[in-house]
Every structure is written in structure tokens, then in C-alpha cells.
Image 1 (cartoon, rainbow, N blue to C red):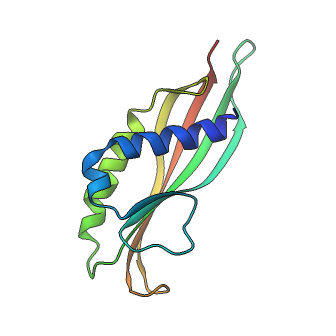
Image 2: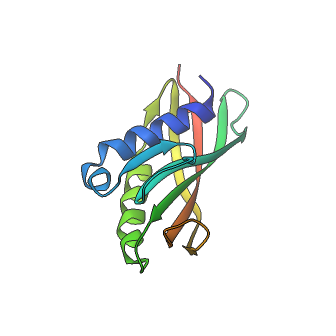
Length: 134
């Protein structure tokens, strides 16, 4: 399996394992959903690049996560972002790839006026450095 697909699978599994996060969501999607009822989360774009050394097969994967709430205030997103951060920080081995580091690159919170009902959205970008096991 490619590092990009392994990263997606690892993040989805880690988020699903967080019962408190999942209790607060109507769904967790692999890709932005066409139709979904807020609050929900999704794993979005995933970009891989070569990373490693002479005898080390590695990839650097940039992965984006999205959160959406239908609230009038963005306050609930703060707790959700903290839970996502903790889940991503605890990633390990997935499908033959070991996640060596998981770092937040950036996050954005903005009013989501374009999709009724109006609410708030967050996009969180992570950099995962991975090496092939075995």
C-alpha cells in the first residue's frame, strides 16, 4: 500500500477510536462529503513526497483534515481540534509504514456562509514523516 493511503487509513482509524470525538460527530468521511449533516469531519487532500535516506525508504505526507459545525459560534471547534491533534500525535504503524513524526503545519477556522445552514469550518494540515517497515 502507498504511504499516502496508509496515512489516510491510520488517521481515519485513530479518529474513529476516539469515542468522545465520534460521539460529537454525525459522520467521519474519507474525502469531503457531497451531502452531510453538520457536525462532521473528513480526511481531505493527501500529498506525498520522497523523504528518507540511502538505506531508508521514506515519504513525507501532507494531509488535510476538515471539520464542520452548524453552530452560530466557533467554540465547539476548539475541543474538536484538540481531540484531532491528540489522535494524530498518537499514530503508529499502518499497512507496513511507521509514522515517525506527525506535526501540525497550520490550521484555519472560518465562517462557513456558503453552505446552508451557516456554521463554522476548520481545516487542519499535518506533515507526517513515514518509513517503510521491514
